Length: 78
Image (cartoon, rainbow, N blue to C red; front, side, top):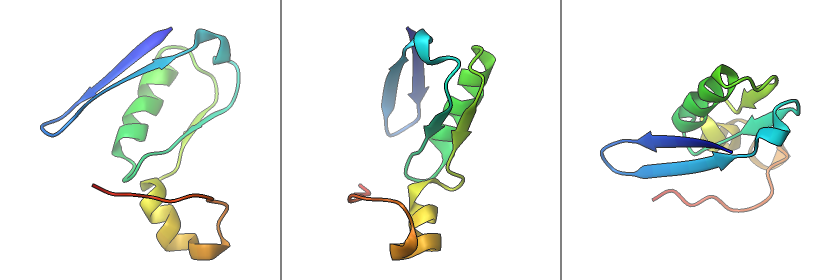
């Protein structure tokens, strides 16, 4: 298990990642794109092969694709 910690003035996130998925493609997303970009760099440095993120986060994805995208669900920004 890899533990990833992201800390800023407003929050503290900890994410545990299974080592067994190192050779599988992984897509991460977050609200604005910053946390998942940091996570992608961290995972690549830990030996993960195919790591991707949605540039600009799920908010930009929604603004770009609106109802034509593949997102299913709701987004709450707080």
